[in-house]
Amino acid sequence: MKTFEVNYSVWKKNKPVHGSVIIQSVEDEKEIVKLAKLDVSTKERVFIQDVKILGFEPTFEK
Image (cartoon, rainbow, N blue to C red):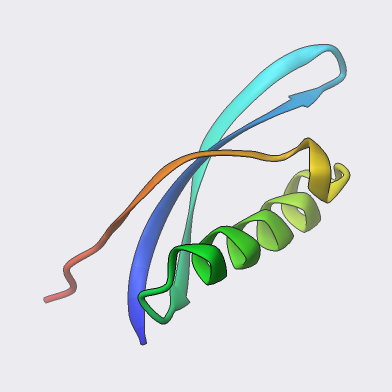
């Protein structure tokens, strides 16, 4: 399991909302996107199909 920072964008109340979340996942792009969309939709209270993943990168913990 690795830790990734995922950048996202959603439309909320007719305004774009940009942010990032930290998730732990295996190094599989589809799995990272799936988990991030689920996490963001829960956090921002929007439908999962309204979440757009802009990119992700591994984070390096000390």
